[in-house]
Length: 109
Image (tube, rainbow, N blue to C red; front, side, top):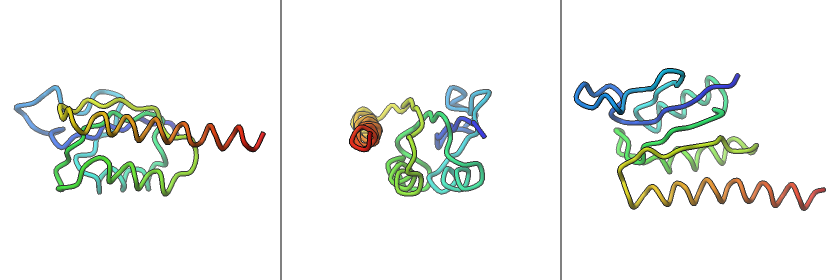
């Protein structure tokens, strides 16, 4: 099943409609909700990520879990967070995950 994941702790905030789950996405407000969705639906094809989440965890907790539990190609992603410190870390982690899998693929060819 191909699906898109929107992670944002303000997805139901009436004062912040730009953070609501966009059409075509399935929304999660916390790391635990995102993990539950992946367990139910499989790894998403695309993720749009906020960095700081409602459960006191950040999106990196979810990404570490995803990487440890799904050893296939990581999903495509976008970061829509306003956190200017965490955003580059998320992008670096996801880029590294892609690169490691490419390197493994080339080594086995």
